[in-house]
Length: 220
Image 1 (spheres, helix red, strand yellow):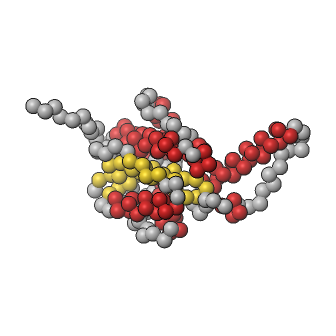
Image 2 (cartoon, helix red, strand yellow):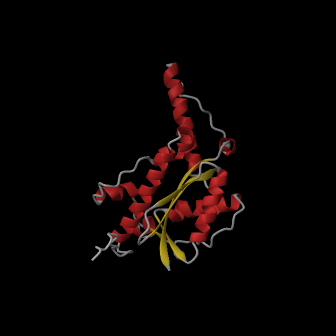
Image 3 (tube, one colour):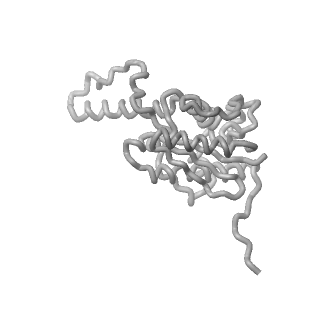
């Protein structure tokens, strides 16, 4: 069984705010400057939008990044519409057959989101186990934290810690969640490709994958 590296990007569903508990979007009483009040409220709205992107029932997938662990360059399916999301998930479901998934924090986020979005889109649900002790898939965050026994770090932390200066992430997680509003779709694709390649390298560093020489052999 071979590994398929997976990374997802998400955003909040249109109109999803109506499902959030009521919150008073008002600045503290000591705020008097109208511009500061507006900035405070705008910041609170942004926080709510970021939360929606992380909510299994109130998010949708905006990008599906994949790669065969031993050869393939990272591929990204952008999902600007729900129909594109449906197509991307159907394609992903076909690629999952006979493969183990390799993710970073996938057991807590990517895999639950994948399963939930398949349900909401009325698609076949992949045979994926979220139980960290019984799953056949590999979550590098789970391995690095010894199943959550110690504190973890972000994927970007390990890129910096291990000196992978050639890997530069174009968007933060919050920026990724706001792409439908900012229109930074090309940057989102680059950001997801970054994460897929970082997962591959981290798995090699953890000795879960062998080093693969992808340089073409010289023609004699």
